[in-house]
Length: 274
Ligand SMILES: [Zn+2]
Image (cartoon, rainbow, N blue to C red; front, top):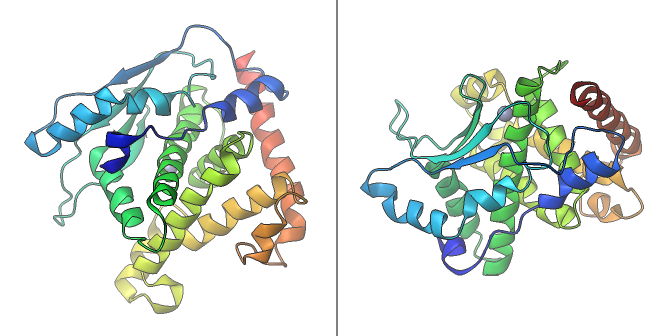
């Protein structure tokens, strides 16, 4: 994977720190990190990749985003070879495991993102790399959202997948690199939506798979993230509307949507962190 050979990931390490230290929530603490990094052994297939990730401290960089949280117990961030699904496809996944108190990033998932963005040959390589970094970082912060809900036993009203996307997006926009890196997940959901032929063109099997999934469909995740980005600072993000990433109908409510979601997280986190 070219990124880890030649350059470091661009991370949004400051996002949660800025949000949780300077915001009203009090669970951030500059103390000993509770994050444990693990690179368990892999088969020959991922031997080289594991070596590169370890040399380049990829998980260590990604974990910067998790460190500001005063986790109630150790939380492990690990890179794992997740194998194949029953249908023969690689298990391209990332997930939080509440029993193990861990977040797993599958090598197959990084491959999936890498392949998707490296096919965007109309973009310069550094732009592809930024999108990749953003999407990977978003994935870690999305899983961190699940982990916060799980580890702090925080109630999530409504779809937890939406809550996790919101948590990640708010952490992104609090970071100086965040708005730029948020293009990563936005491109990801757009490209993924195109792969599943979007809601106008997919066949019935796709429809069942997409609508029965615990996640919102890609288009919804795309517009929800765009709305929070715009709502975090409407005057600075007029381009979100101009470029069609957000409809004029949704836009007027995004600032209050952002404020409300951010306050909800802060309220819950403050209660749990004190
Ligand atoms: Zn999730």
